[in-house]
Length: 129
Image (cartoon, rainbow, N blue to C red; front, side, top):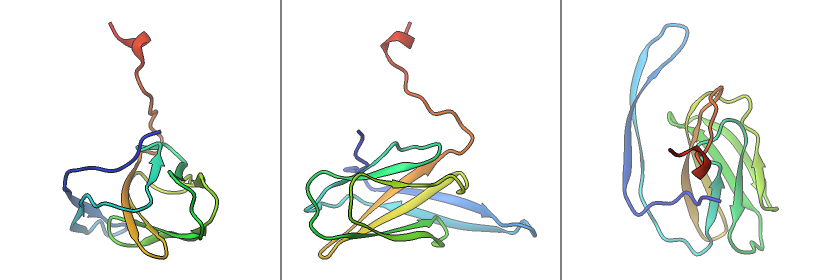
């Protein structure tokens, strides 16, 4: 399991092409590290299809999950009360998504990378020269 968290501030500059007129919009995405009382992990990341949200400790009340694309458009919004929770991303396009986890007393954000139609694998010792 890999926890998606960093001790670095991250930022990305992106260009988004819209259809059908193929107009271009420049936007930026940033994430900063923060400390939280409850820790959540998102895996696998990057993902080729679905991904999971898991809590590292027992959560006593549901959390609100809000997932948006880099332009801010909300893709999914739902309450989750059982972990690990599966997020079905089969119909989404490849790219970066912001996953916001909202509980009664805190908000936590993660960036998830989807690579649809790509084979994602991990090299083990058996694959090394």
